[in-house]
Length: 405
Image 1 (tube, rainbow, N blue to C red):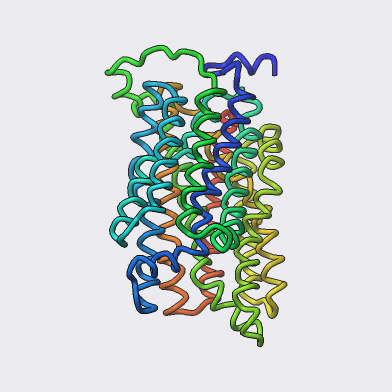
Image 2: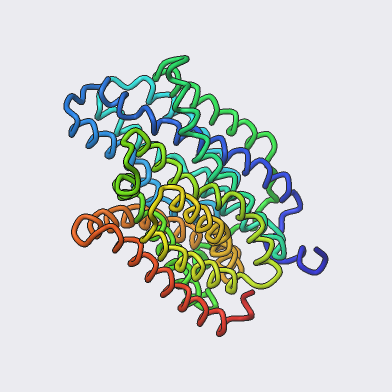
């Protein structure tokens, strides 16, 4: 690491900080997603009666957190640039621990939605951890470290619903929320006690305001923000139609939700497997090359998904697609980190996180609309076209900006 480890922003405690961020991101994501299996039941307990009302309130309650989290991500990133990354992680973990525990005490649907909105405002541990790791890790290890962190985040989103599937039966729904709050509180304690951050030089007010003007190449940063948005649109556009698509592939109604669940999980599992490897590869051969190659492979893998004849073919192709996409978000964060001044890293990565949240909102809406009006195959083929277009654009960028890798 000699030669690279002395670049601006290098933190001597980066390995311990990475370990705590990995643990904290995993536990907070487990706690945030374990409510998925029982959220409709809780909504029903709180007063929703008919099927349509339960589905509507479940969607509002779940999406509320992502809405507010996406809106405030740049603000937390900017405050992190100014006052340090550790205070942002401490704030997020404590805020999430309190709001999660309070969700178990809600008496009305509006209280639940309000607390979900608050969780988004107060939270953002994994996005804060991404900013800290990106800012502190030596340049030649950054994509690997972000890949490892990304694996922890995705593992948390996979483990959460599995735990949420059986825990309420053992301790009840309200106690499950309290247990989730307790789990995040452990992450809060680990962050307070173990994360070390070198005191930061104060950023002058004028310097903070002119951060965008001082970015050497704004087009490259904008391209990375757009690529992150595109990736989430492409990943999430399939989600609303997978269960309906699986219905056309199997004659056994009892197996539909099971196969659909496996298909949804397969891509995330593939990403967990490949994220740190693709990050290490990007550190070696260049981040731009890996971004363009991953988008192209994923785009090509979407084409046969439109023509599968069995559920297992779909699951296998989704897993391969997850393998190809695993290193993308870490590479995007790394390219941004290498191309913005140190005092603006948090703000610009905050914009990147907001762009990804926007993709998570737009993707399902787009996929549901296209699937309902044109056909389900059109969703796969249209998404394939988007990813291949993104691959072509990133390849051109890669040719122009070899120095960024």
